[in-house]
Amino acid sequence: MRRPLLAALALLTLSGMMPASAQETLEDARARRETIAEEAADNASRIDSLEAEDAEIVAALEEIDTWIAIQEARLDRARQELAATVEVEAEAWARADALAARIGELQLELAAQLVDGYVQGFRNDDGLLLDTEDLNSVPLLRFVIDETSGATAATTDLLRLAQDQQADAIAEAEQARREAEDLRDEIEGRIADLEASRVVQEQLRAEVAQRIAALEDEAAILADEDTQITEFIRAEEERIRREAEEAQRRAEEEAQRLAEEEAQRLAEEEAQRQAEEEAQRQAEETPPDGDSPPDAEAQPDAEAQPDGEDGTEPEPEPEPEPEPQPRDGVPSFARPVDGAISSPYGYRTHPIYGTVRLHTGIDFNSPFGAPIRASANGTVIFVGSFSGYGNTVIVEHGNGYSTLYAHMSGYDTRTGASVSQGETVGFVGSTGLSTGPHLHFEIRLDGVAIDPAPLL
Image (cartoon, rainbow, N blue to C red; front, side, top):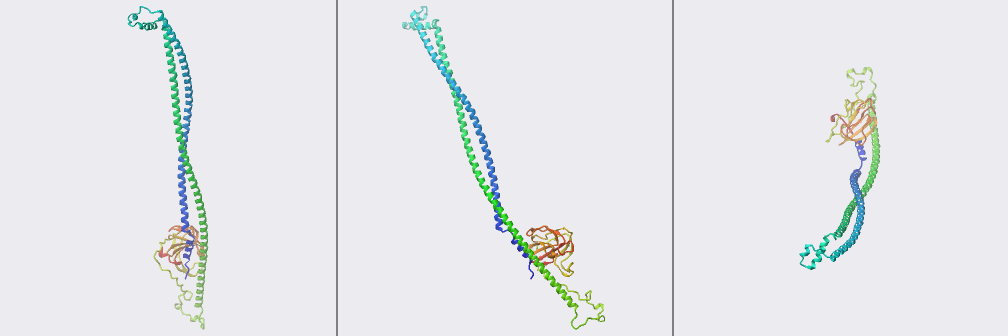
């Protein structure tokens, strides 16, 4: 029984695919790396926001320091003014003390003058004395009269002036001191408020710095994890790449071996068929034992001649190999190139060998370099040179069906690639056993060629 070459090639290709678990692990690592990148970006944004907030706090602290410096300068001036007012107040009190002494002197002088007036007697022309009923009040009344008279007026004026100056000096000094103390207290209150504000701002800045430090620690952890994941992904991709290359190499070597075996088998079958044809021909040309070759007179007339043009029996056509029976799930095939069919499926005289043999596909007459399209969706299981087919691409479509595209000038796909119907897989050429540019197209079922025409 013929070995199903295409099924074997499909198994080899599929065996080189990446394991599902490795793919899932790699995808998980890539997803985690994307999550880390998002978290790192969010962290950086939050750090930028906190650093901007910290800059605002620093600016506020600088402004507070500026105002404190201004207020401290004002406080220095207020203290100097207060010291000056204290000196003024001290001078005022000194002047007051001096005036008090002077007032005492004036009071003594006034008393002396009053005593002198009392001793010298009173003026009798005062009506006040005549109306007095109490003789004991006469000296006092005389004193009053004398005080209001010219005798003591000057002394009384000086006394009053000294008293007024004393009161004014003390009041002025006390007022200046109170104002200076009020200004000092006001400035000290402002400085205290500013100091309190600075304490609050410094506390806020400490909190911001703590939050920034925490975010930076988290960012460092994320960066370290990202580095580890990146190294893991790189190592895993490198391992998968090496395994894929090794699997690809083994698949290509096995496919080449199977192709060579298939080509050798076909060559042996062809040689055996030719040997059988040659033996059959010789048997037909050799007369039976004991008979002599017929002479001219014994030849029958033209109407009795055999059907062959050379007077021999026509060579029987080989029995066709039985095709597999159609089954459900037949792919929807389409013509792979534009162009007319130059040679259909079936037995024909080989254009190079000159012998009758089965033409296992359809030849399309297309120009050199024309694109060759996948006839149906599938997976490429072979790309390379394949015996007399020349440059060949084989596509597996599932359910036992596959297509073959031969004599290509070049490829536009690779082994293991998934292709869609109509996707270019190569270009028309004339490689292998070919007499000119064309596409040899086959459809096989379980590795056995079938007539493509009914399926296109």
